[in-house]
Image (cartoon, rainbow, N blue to C red; front, side):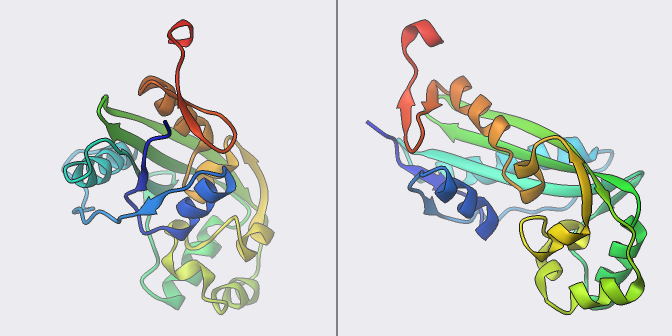
Amino acid sequence: MTPRLILASASPRRSDVLTQLGLDHVVLPAAVDESYREGETPTEHVERLARAKATTVTRGESGALVIGGDTVVVDGARVLGKPMDERSAVDMLLSLAGRSHVVLSGIALAGAHGISSRVAATEVRFRDMSRDEARSYVSTGEPLDKAGAYGIQGRGAALVAAIDGDYYSVVGFPVDAFLDVLREAGWRYDFGRIIPLEPRDR
């Protein structure tokens, strides 16, 4: 029997990936404090938040599998969140132009098994762009709710020269890591459904 699948995130992009995989799910966003803790690395941060979102929703959803996720963009020593406004979005894009940065996506799966989590890291290289190009992209409104001020799955695809790693990690839902946490929880993806692992597969 396929378990009830819950996405503990308001991100339409994460929901879109689950839909693309053919997995019916319910969206129940978790309210958690997303502030950094003292001394916390970006990798630790995204994994902790993914786990916190999943466990927060699990408390009232026995028998379900709950997915939590979090994504940040890391440029050297800088961690880039969502831009405050259009001007900061333009500045953020120009700071990344012609260079590589790293997208970290944490994913967690909570349920009767407890909780499993992973962090996927993908390197993204931007092509060069002018201030006018950055302004034009920002004027679409697309980057204003996204870490790093761009969406690779939308018009922001035109900013990207190359990636090294999981494309879906950049979208915010690392599919390969999701399959790993599913197996750790005793389940596997079967092209449109989730089924229990056979004893020989464990």
